[in-house]
Amino acid sequence: MPDTSNSQDIVERANTAITTLQQAKAAIGKVILGQDAVIDLALNALLCGGHALLVGAPGLAKTRLVETIATVTGLDEKRIQFTPDLMPADILGAEVLEEDEAGKRHFRFLPGPVFCQLLMSDEINRASPRTQSALLQAMQEHQVTIAGVAHDLPKPFHVLATQNPIEQEGTYPLPEAQLDRFLFQIDIDYPDEAHEREILLATTGVRESVPTTVLNAKDLLGLQDLVRQMPVGEKTLNAIVTLVRLGRPDQTSLDAVKDGVSWGPGPRAGQALMLGVRARALLQGRLAPSVDDVCALAAPVLKHRMALSFAARADGLSLPDLIDRLIKEIA
Image 1 (cartoon, rainbow, N blue to C red):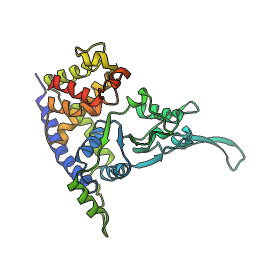
Image 2 (cartoon, rainbow, N blue to C red; image 1 turned 30 degrees about the vertical axis):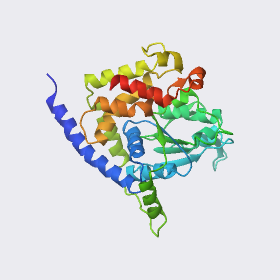
Image 3 (tube, rainbow, N blue to C red; image 1 turned 90 degrees about the horizontal axis):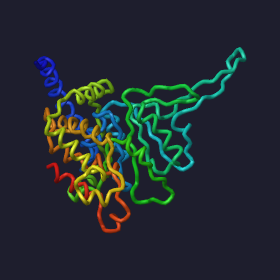
Image 4 (cartoon, helix red, strand yellow; image 1 turned 90 degrees about the vertical axis):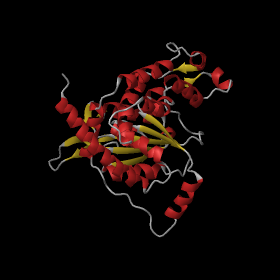
């Protein structure tokens, strides 16, 4: 028989979490205007214990979004401005040789900015591949190794990286292995006319809105644990498995994918959807995820985990259009 007491506990915790998350969304929304979908996806990534890649033109409040989320969630935040001359030690830290009062020399580890709870990697594609790869172990294993010694990162640990899609000169595109470490790719578009008017009025006056703290690190860890305990129905699970497999050229039944996709989503895509649909249900005030949640998260999960062939791009096929076709198969 199912453990009804445990189920009841999950329901009670979920109801409390829904209220808290509504307060957090409102606190962020007072500062970041007209980007409700972006706020939801960024919070979703944190609830899943993952990382997110924010892609948008300059001036769309990517930096301010990360700073506001750090304040509202009570996380220790640091920022790294990625440049071509940035070295791995500038991110991870390094050992320095020191001499004590007795004249004895010893090495002491000086932690880099990666030792925080929320790391903003600004314009991550401007750093060299060597420096980009320095984040791989940190993002995946939540620890870094310096001089053969492993150093654990704080808990929780999240990376919110930004990328400018316009200026590509002098940049280093992230390799597939590193892109796969990001739970979501969050595209930030220009605000609509009404919200842009509101932004102008809110940000050019004497006072600007200041975010308030709603959560702390312990609260966030509890929410992450709750997300992993939430049940996923068989119909939703089947939709996730079907969607991911349809995106793989060697497993799909769709000719557009067979002929137009160079490589498809791996198992991490399914894992991201399994966690993401649960978190999205909580953020929308529901206790169980649905197929609609899978459809809503398909693009943020898949767009950086799939690549079109040259022939498909030459024929005018775009990745968003292809993902829309996949969504129609499961909707």
